[in-house]
Length: 107
Image (cartoon, rainbow, N blue to C red; front, side, top):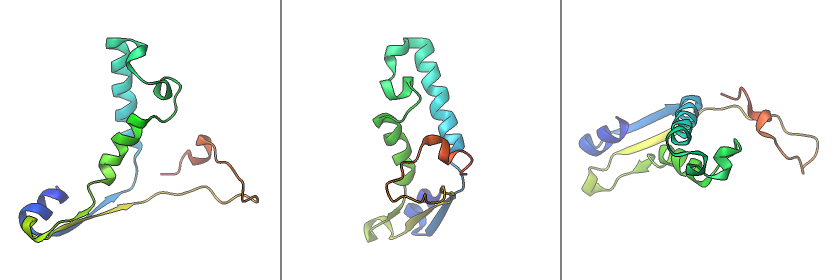
């Protein structure tokens, strides 16, 4: 909707994303369907093992790529993306390596 208003009306819009949990659930659900229909080889190793894959990064990047400042030919509107999340507190060591579990409940 924000992109439509920006392009059609030249409006300046803001999209607030307060959680990506539903996007992740959609990703997981579609991955399960792929496995059910086409077998486990239909998905990349990262998805089979519960990790991130290049396909998952591309999926989430489409959400981020909606942010834009349109040129005058496209009426000059804009879409600003505001992603709200909590990050784990910093560790004592500058060499700390975060685990996926550190981010559970971050949204």
